[in-house]
Image (tube, rainbow, N blue to C red; front, top):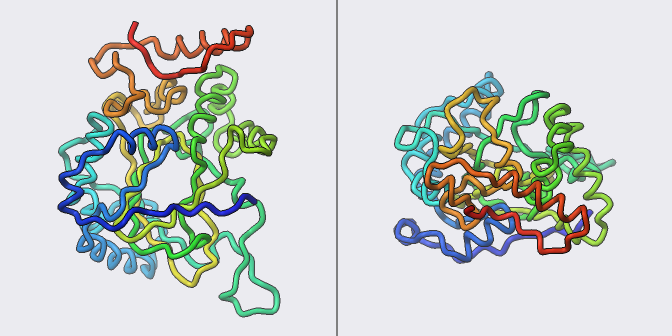
Length: 331
C-alpha cells in the first residue's frame, strides 16, 4: 500500500471569519486539481455538539440501520446544513442547486465503529485490530448500485463531528485527481461509459482499478489521501472523485454527516436520470462558480463541450500531440 498521506490543516478559524471569507482562487484551483477541499472549522461547535448527541442516540437505537438508511432526522442533524454557511458556500461554488432556499430534510449519518474493515490480531483481545488487506482497492463513486442507472449528483459535502486523531480511524480516504481519470475512462469514452452503465459499481469500475494497478510510478494515479479532519471541518468532494472509508483500528467511533448536493443544471427528473454525460466527462462542467465550468451553461444555453472532448480525443489517437485541455470553451 502507498504511504499514508495526512493533510496538515490550517489553523482554526472562527465562524465569523469564515462567514466573511469567499473561496479564494487558490482554493478553487486546488478543488479542481484534487477533486476535494477541506474547510477547517466551518460549522459552529454548538451545531456539532447537538448533532453528535443525536448521532449517539441513533447508534444505540434498535432500528438504527433503518433510521440511518432512511435519512430522515430531527433538526439537530440537518441543522448542520440549515443553520450553517454550507448552503451559501455551495451556492458560491455551484452557482445554484436544487431545493436552494428550502429546508434540508435528508442527511446521511455515517458512524464507523472500531473494527470496520479490520481483522482481529491473533492472540490479543477483541479490541486489537489489523486493517484488511487490499481495502484501498475498494474505492468507489456513489450512485452506481443499480445496473443500467447512474444516480449522479454534483457534490458530496461532509461534516466531521469528532476529531479524527490519526489515519486508519475510519476516516474518508480519497484519490486526489482521480476524478480526471474516471472522466477520461468513463465520461469521455463511449465504450467506457456504456461499460459503466451496464455493469454498475462492482464490475463497472474495474477498468479504472486495472489502470491504477499498472500505474506503478503514480504518473496518473496519485497515492491515496487520508482526510484526518477535526470536529467542525467541512469536506467538499466532487461526485467523480474515487473515495473509500478507511479501516478503523482506533478505539473511537468515526462520526460524520454527509449531504448530497445537485446543481440546478441537473433538472428535477427521476433520481436515476439525474446525470448528464457531459458532467461525467468534465467533472466541473456544471459548477458555475468554478473556473472550469461551462460559460455557455452559465448563461442558460446548451453547449457542445462533450463533442469537443470527443474531437480532442480522436486527434490524440491520430497522433496530434497538442496539450490535452478539457476545459469548456465558448464557440
